[in-house]
Length: 176
Image (cartoon, rainbow, N blue to C red; front, side):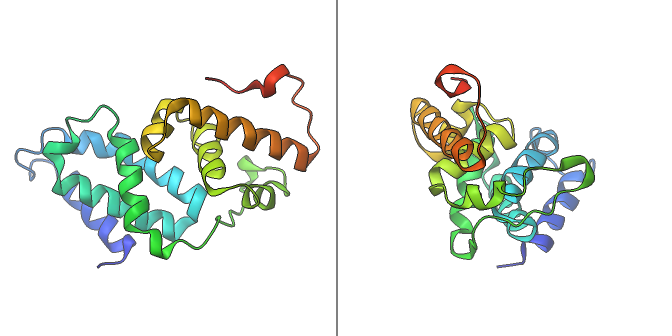
């Protein structure tokens, strides 16, 4: 297996080489939309290198199975599962993200996220960190949409308690 960085660059090179892909049926446009969403989700949950690997694996699989992928209602969610399963053995834990000046966050957030269950952490990061809908997260995690709401609600309650934050909203203020 190639490294994620070289695999991703190969996929991007192939996809972005205008006019060289015959019969790709919109794969280039799909990658332009899907790659940043997948990379952000994987990077937030796994770190830069592991996130790049998972994104590359997912997009390489999508290219190989493009006829199948283009028929899906939520291909990004499905590819999240592909990238997750193909890189599971290399999972190291929650990424130690160094915030940039524009993205400062509570220093206790990463340790608090690490204390969540993997499902709660994944759900809350995809919903609140990546802006995915509950249905997209449900598809990505292979669970029902109401279960995503439960994971997010419990995770947010836990994070608020750990960080000493009062939401000021009845019921925790999660969307459905």
